[in-house]
Length: 571
Image 1 (spheres, rainbow, N blue to C red):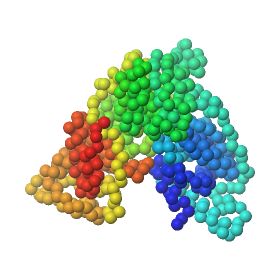
Image 2: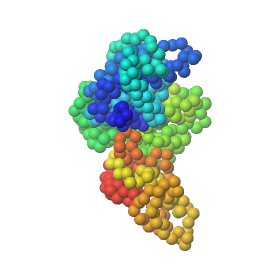
Image 3: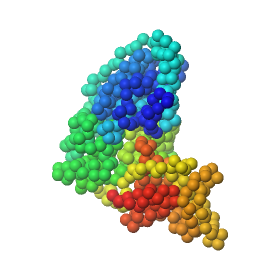
């Protein structure tokens, strides 16, 4: 068995994440060497034009073991002459902020919103998050390094590290430890200066003393990394800040630090009502996801929150962007509401559908002259690209942008007033469903579903009842695949019912179908071995009809999956 075969499952689409049991000292050592190889290779390219030494910032979240891993990585990287700036306990957006202060390289040891027994890490190379191919390349580099390491040990080399041809032998450097006060203050000051620029005031002579918004807010930190500074940051801007679960605790005593989980915001809702607050907000474990509650104690759907924040980005974009972009684009992920494209178009923007993943969105926004000024996804990641701050999904920054905009439009309860005017939908939550067993089939269920939908759509568009007859679905409707399925007879009437004329099909990330009265999506999760599904309709009857359509489409491939889709309850 190759070295670290068990750890291959940790290397996912967005980051490294999985059971704490897999993060052994030997694995951390090997991973540190792989990171050193990666950053040194990038540094060699940059040093063709620059003579700067390589600098990487490293921080960690509150999880038990994250600090140990961060210290281990710092120690390993310094052995190869890399200057490490240790940030301590931080949010992931703070890592991105501090990376930008140096060379754009950074690592944060975090498993984000996952359960307490999960560990992980995210990183930046030259300001950019890795894509899935680059993440797998890091794993391959780890294997290459370890294989060479074993061969050298077997050959009795005196120095087991000399085999790393991509790493030069240099004198080890000591890490630089920044104080937690310095790390937090610089970050908060930068955010304060953003609002001094967007909302200038004659009274605001000192940008460190912003004008207070006449708002009472409740914040739930869920014992995550925002616990250390959320109160200090928001008290700079709001008249009263009421805190919940703001003690950093890697055991997460109130539950997973995931504000999108069903009923997870109940405590926040109750406190907003009890304190007569204007709104409430919750952040996930590493501070890059945001959920909100209005003054009536109702959870603001992520679809509506994305729409509101898109308005903020459009209204507050600098004149230089207004002059340079004819029509700004708003990026939203494939799990968002069917109403969202229409709403975004009415704002004067071009809505652009994206596959799920904030790292994918950031990569598109960071391309030269990108017309995308804002991006968001159902899971609560929101990213501004309007030149005011870093291009990163920062939950606290996004919340402050919304607070200032709501106050500027001069409506005490603007959040409730606005969301009540938006189209109502009835939807399921974003459900995780067990991955069907397709060991005896040549392609996954989602791929089979995509091929069936393409086939049926083509038949409905080009075929009449007289020449349709019956289609027996013994194989995938593609010459590329020979997947065996249950025999399934489809009449033209059935095909027209399942995929009516005008139904929009997207397969950029799983299968999404947009009907006149709602939508549904089924896709492979990028963070777990599950399928994720969400369905929505204008009414409860519409929702059930769309679930029934998806269940019927999936039934030939997996009866159990079809039943699970039918049973998903409305939120």
